[in-house]
Length: 454
Ligand code: ATP
Ligand code: MN
Image (cartoon, rainbow, N blue to C red; front, side, top):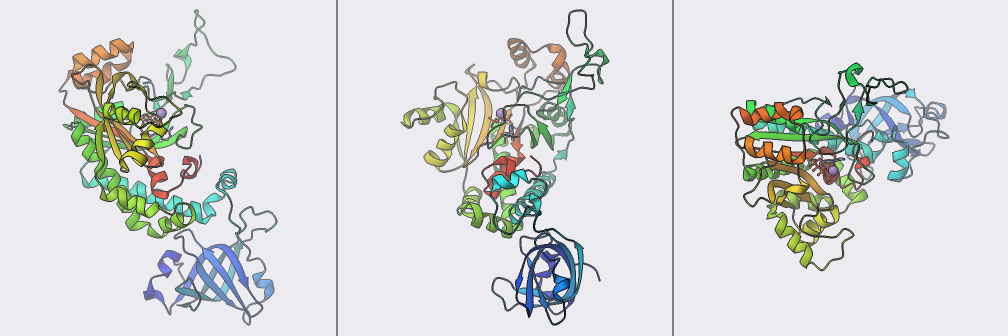
């Protein structure tokens, strides 16, 4: 008999049929007449109750069925009299695949703290919490692809190992095959990269954007979705050194088109998760964050507030609130400032635009005022910045001038400047940190808890 996943067993059409179910034991309880096993196979947060009539099984047979053991049961799927479940399996046969010694298996049934589970990262996917998070994460990844696919975007794969280090989004992890105990040096004492694998210094990517622009100025609308690496001080609940980023880049979009796309995009993903992962989200809400569902629905049903950085700074200055980091025009906003605007002032997601050019990247479109650029950051409750983007500078002249001003060597960016040299168009794009979206949708508060292996 073929195995049926537990998620499917709750389909009322299967009641009264003989089924085969496989999974890991969560708990076993009962008495000498009847034993109940809660079985989970990872397909759903819900456990299937397996009922063992002890006139047909021996104590010896059930002894290995402890928390964490893996078993295969066949039996009749019937309506359940018990509280909290709609159906159960009356066991007919039992096969134990693998035992889990109660003295050494770390995930006993009592609730563990998230800190404890971070130490047991190799086993934590077997807990209810991480099962739920990982299913939501997977559904969100699917939603992302379907959103862009429905709109005719091309999925572009940008390199992970790169020699372009001018993005400036964060410190990079160097990639080398040089023998670190015996580094070849030039006459001037500098490292001789000519004998390195690529013949020059290379690193893991901090963003696929620049290559994304090459795609957008050929294919029209592209998106990337892949691993990103930043060797920054990531000792915060919102930074990882290895994370996933989604970076759409669109020809013929101005900043307003860009904001509209960003807002539609996050709303689509959240709606998808609410529609397809409701059991998991309800579980996480009940365990960690009572307002989760309400917050998700609120974001889906409300327009994001749009205002400029300058207006935002004014509000912060007038708030009378004491912040850890000082607020002044020109300051890079910290998460506490972003969250004040979102959670206390507007009580809505906010899109801040037109930041001072000094705190933003070189490629952003320069405004007439000479002081600001056409940047846009989307700020969310509990998270702060979830998206960073901009309209890009399409003028070769202005972009070259900015590059020279910042001292970026032309030999590193000639290929990028070719997009402006030949058939340049107005265009825009943004980056969404995937784990920040998963954080928001799951209601978790530490980014280490929404990636399988932080
Ligand atoms: P922050 O100010 O929060 O460090 P950033 O300005 O460095 O963000 P961008 O370079 O604009 O971020 O990157 C785009 C998006 O990638 C951010 O809006 C955020 O969602 C995500 N992101 C950036 N750095 C990290 C990180 N270290 N870990 C996880 N996500 C990140
Ligand atoms: Mn950063």
